[in-house]
Length: 352
Image (cartoon, rainbow, N blue to C red):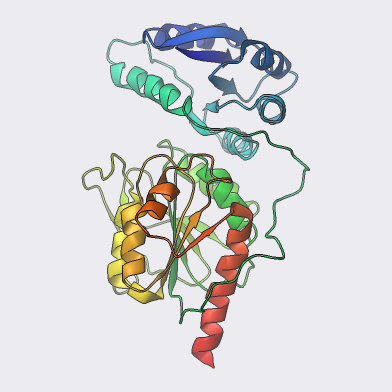
């Protein structure tokens, strides 16, 4: 039985969650909390498998409650966001940085007769997140920076034309850690596919821009990629790169049950740039991206996967490691320095 703690100061939302979640015989709502302090206390007392967390509550808010829960009794936390304005989005992504594993829309008409798909999606999310392994976290209040003793690659490649990244569960916080540590002079374009609830990609771009020195934008069809610019795949469209360095978008079939798919991007980059690509596969559930990362490596590109210890979910990176798709495996706090070293080093060699 999956035990859920619902944290929200709205009795209506609490009723909705109990009604929807307990319609599944494998889920039970073991308690409710109306503020952050109550949530921290009940998380320790009830030992739920999953917590749904509102972020804007009186007193201790959802961000601080998430931090305290992850320090004292680590539990998968799903952020419930009313994402209709930028401040609310920022708060939601800050909660992900604090240790939450997923962010979804706050349900409105989910009890309507024609909302069965939305109810099923909520139940599926809770079931999947209950399987996430979380660890105790300590917060110093400072950003994670690359360690000084980061490993360097055995060889420096030639010129890297493009960096591609893929992430799923735990990805927004991982991307923030990496992008915020890249220098403003980083010379290669970066293309990213992040699996995230539809409607949140624009907010993710804005949130990442607050700490990243590089410009971040949502990819546009037929846009030519530029050095030092970060491009996020838009909602519900596959992102690919043409041989001429232009971005392509399409609403094709789901790949690995998702759209946009990391594999679709990585496969296109393997075909279009081959040995001048650097692929990075980060934390996430499932196997999306593993095959595409292998394609980049087979074409002579540099490939990297996040390690198990620092991955919120060691699914996609594990799949890549098992199929020998990654030439390097690193903890999260060493990836930015590695990227900077490889890309800058390759350009120095190419210009020598």
